[in-house]
Length: 449
Length: 99
Image (tube, rainbow over all chains, first blue to last red; front, side, top):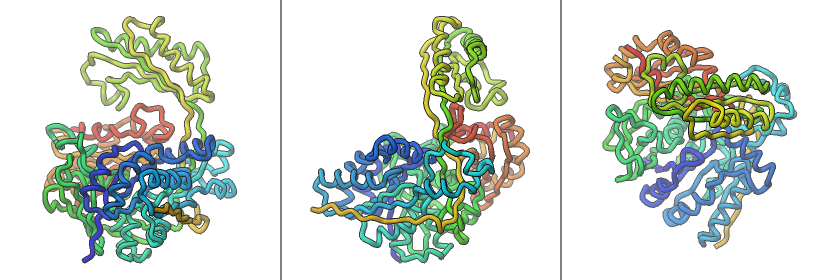
């Protein structure tokens, strides 16, 4: 039975680069997939593009391509990535520039667009925001951008057209991996069982190191070797959709039934209905079997007909966040941090700062799990006050950090290491649109030898 | 005994919804987890951290439970004021459950 090997080169925008090079050089893979686009990243990229029409794609794109393209060309590896973010055309041009500078032509670069549905959303104000039930029109002028999650189809088209590199904007993460399987095996797009199996492989692979021992270690309970040299995963997939998840021999990390089970349920709600643009995947009957050291066999994915709608991320301007922090240590640290917290709370009232929301945390005490779960914990040696607030203006946001910093000369004894920041918030909500309204396109660029 | 002795866990986020898996180290412990780690126990343990609904999905074949918690992430990672805006540390909170 025909088999295809694909590797994950990145699981998020800032991910390590060397594991991708290792896969390209020693993974014996046919495809290398870089998933770099989180929920909010694309809206931020839209803002960057608005300021500079040549910007708006992944800032590490050129570095990643320069690192992996030589080995990918040598070994016949096709690259698939959503690093195009808000500007796949500019990203494609950046890939071409890297290829030219390294003398790596000929190279066919496919650019997938059509995910930017901002104008469609502006014209369809009756659509409902999933999280609030309010109409999209309630976002009004605060809407920055709307991007639909595309499926595997346009990537399959690009691969059929001989692409060596496929650059997309918003595409559902598992679809980046499903596409080469559909292309290689000639799977029918309405074979929901195979779409489910391929989506299962994509879901396990999409966060890179998170299935190969990253984000897993808990010393004494779950020990993982050599995380500083973590190997990213590769999947060997058979034409019937069964797969083995493994990694390059000698790399760090660990692939076991447990690492795969943790990743299988990561960001999943109903395991029997994991919705993507390609399929309503069903992971409820998945079997995970250890087949050898760092080799896990995965099968039993299934699926039902794909949803009639596509999910759309709505990036919108949601005011500003200001934050300040300061530390206290040694005897009485907790009491001084609490006093500092109360002073800042009162100061914000005295100066009448218009706050939409305020949060006062003691890092080391209650900042993560709140006061209830930490109530019985012993007093820590050092404590850090963190004050964060939501405001209508940047100026107001900056005043929050200033009030914390002001504790240096106006607050309790021994405060140190004050920091402050203020930022604009681009928040994301979602809506659904009929898939007929979205028209994915593939443009091919050629780099000559 | 703490849940941590029998199970491991990972938290994921989508928008303002968090999911927390609870996975038995040994599949023979699954039925014990299914009986002990109920929606009510999780809701009581996490208390004010949960603002919305709690739904539990059972995956006996994988020895795992999956909890889905709505309106738990301060509006979601893109706008939350929380230090852990993803709610990633919730997995460690649930492993502290007494069973």
